[in-house]
Image 1 (tube, rainbow, N blue to C red):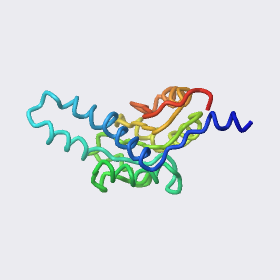
Image 2 (image 1 turned 180 degrees about the vertical axis):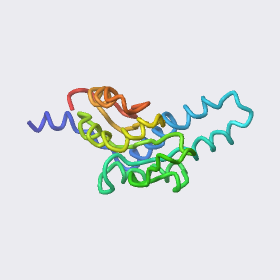
Image 3 (image 1 turned 90 degrees about the horizontal axis):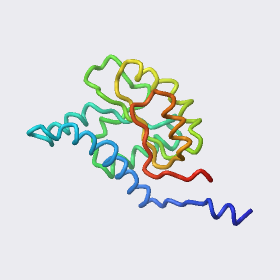
Length: 165
């Protein structure tokens, strides 16, 4: 039993978690936006405009890990704190907001994300506003389950766990 547990034990220290948060921002948020505005003359200005039209939310309620990660995510990526909101602050009538990005630490089955996403994330999606879900770690099964909800425009994980988890 101990051998099986040790074979499935993955530890991410504080520095590794911060590096994953940097990767999440760079690979799933910054690069896609920059690619979108690549042909424009002032890429940096347009990137900042796009970023300012984005709101970041933690997956789950304020006492859960998704919202806890937002603090570190904001710090390591030097993002303005005004771009981070609580779920209750989502204003679907604000036409200046182009996208909402949910961030969470881990999903093994996808069940909790799906349950949580069936509330505000679904409302956002129904308004045809871009809504994405980015995870630090997830299994392929969880990612597929979340994608199959057809709520999120994009579902990505920095680190994909194998199915033994």
